[in-house]
Amino acid sequence: MVLAGADNLRRNVDKVNGLNVFPVPDGDTGTNMNLTLTAGCEELKKKPSSHIGKAADALSKGLLMGARGNSGVILSQLFRGFAKHVHDLEHVNVQQFAGALQQGVETAYKAVVKPVEGTILTVSKEAAKHATQYRRGSDLLDLMQEVLSKAKEALARTPEQLAVLKQVGVVDAGGQGLVCVYEGFVTALSGGLVQVNDDYATMDTTLGAVSLVPGMNLAKEVHAHLPAQAHLATEDIEFGYCTEFMLTVAPGKVKGLVFDEGTFRDQLSKLGDSLLVVADDELVKVHIHAEYPGEVMNQAMNYGALSRIKIENMRDQHSHILEDMAEGYEAPVSTTATAVTPSKPYGFVAVALGEGITDILSSVGVDVVLSGGQTMNPSTEDIVNAVNSIDADTIYVLPNNSNIILAAQQASELVDNKTLIVIPSKSIPQGLAAILAFQEKADAQTNTAAMSESLRRVKSGQVTYAVRDTNMNGIDIKQGHFIGIQDGRIVSSQPSLLDACKKLLEEMIEESSEIVTILTGEDAVEAETEELESFIQAAYPDIEIELHPGGQPLYAYLFSVE
Image (cartoon, rainbow, N blue to C red; front, side, top):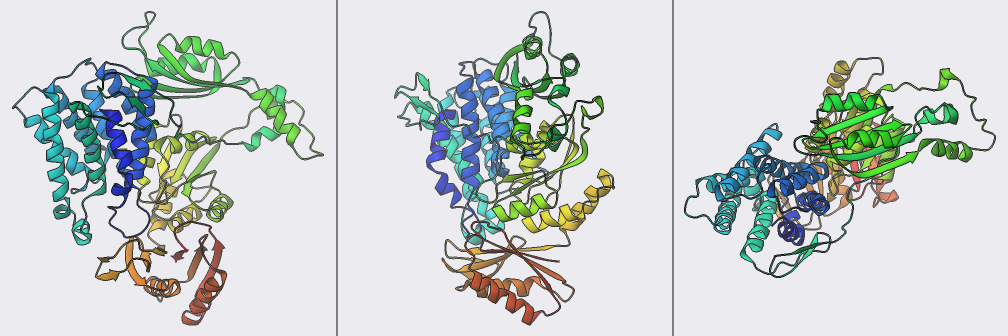
């Protein structure tokens, strides 16, 4: 069912993406749901099981770590609740399956701070409610056909619940994505021919045997090179092996022991340093610097099975770093005073797309810049990996996109031994304003308040082109025209790029405005940029202009006004 649902969603990604309410090429709901479900399928392939509880748990873990964007996070929560309901069940009947759908809805609603009706939440809720009230049979196919039918009905009503959908004349994209998944479920249960992409599995026409094949690994590695490595001697490394693995905790006792996260952490802390233990139900991520990795793994195997094992010799790595240093560098002499470099109090993770924007963020103190934006949201796992790569006690995350905020907030639940604070920036200008509001000597509470307040003081604008005819906010928009968007609201549509920029700036700039910052995209033309500067100087002589190459795709120009 899951593999067929994933394949049907994959084949309909463009359809789901095309349902976005804004007529711009930033359709990513289908992409996010597809990547999230693909990550879940990857985990299923690693742990194939005919025990539905175990299979659901594997799916849930993969979805949780691979979740991208709001739609992906919500999808992961739907199946996380489902997995909790069937956790101990090898087989399920119709009533149990319906109950699992209902618990999935409840889990998803709890994960969203401000649930909005007329979205994937509503579609899942109406379908699950109908499932729990279905009493006319004991066949799972009949139930799923009813669930699919009710989901389609709920999807058709979403424009009546969310004004922006009705205005544009589309149904909710996330709800459509869920319907695609349910359609795949019904196809699999009905015994029809399922043509599953090789990235998931190959399935015979009887739906009996599933042949698992390798798929692509969607997780992004985040490598952090700490400056402290260049300031200590190789022989001062007390624990020489960076050891990482996943522990799947077995149910009940193993070798007479029952897993307890606190006890397990204490046991491993005696075997090394830089210990990180992230537990989510029965899946535990372990990172430790140890002198004897075998002892660490032997200790962990008292509680279950190991996977994704990675061991690196840090002494060798450090020697190579020193060898690769510029000629004339003198390797430090071993001293106990320089053997340990304390972690810094604060670190920063930001999301951006474009080499220029990445350079700007790095120059103002961001430790890790994740590549992402409207068309490619980083997953929860990407954010967790980035946070864990920074040797700091408190990490601020700047999503710089409204569709990444929920994934960042979910990442905070998966980070251990450090504090993750999400500043809900919705644009690059907001993210820059937040990082510039940070004060090194202030405490976390003061900085969080100041950075959050800075978001309200900056206006963000962007110019791109429309991909369809529509009408938004009383503005007629033609396919191929350039549209100006201020803080998520379309304010202009013009045949000319420059005219669209000028109209947008006229909306953004007020009498009290002092600075206009322009980030040029990869498609920006120098002559047009110069003409744009001249327009601002002539129309607003008291305004200070800052111009930077952003290199961002899709948007010819990004503006901020302060």
